[in-house]
Length: 131
Image 1: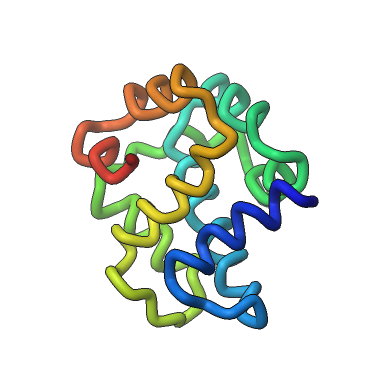
Image 2: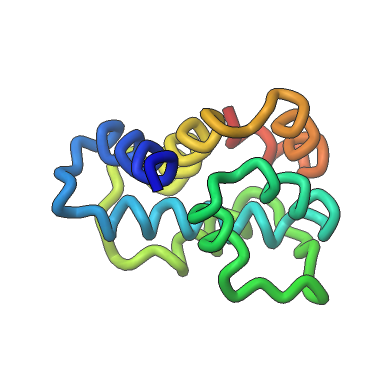
């Protein structure tokens, strides 16, 4: 639980959101995780998930249908999926900034090698969104 709270707090601090808006940071985390998960192959999605904190891993897998992945998404498709999953919160820096912020928070728990594998599995325009 502590690791999940650290990720959410990282997102909140990046945007100056008070803890009372925890649902907003949670929705940001969930929407980016789902877009990443849906773009990865089943094997890569599982390798990535193995490094996530337990509660975040549950959010990651929630609603997943492995028979429908990987979705062929490029940058705009990826950002559109996140935009559709996010409630109508105003996010400073737009959806691209949100992806960067959430990915930066997740990097606390993902090894460099796994992060490199994730980026390599994506089109260059999409990988460029990830720190």
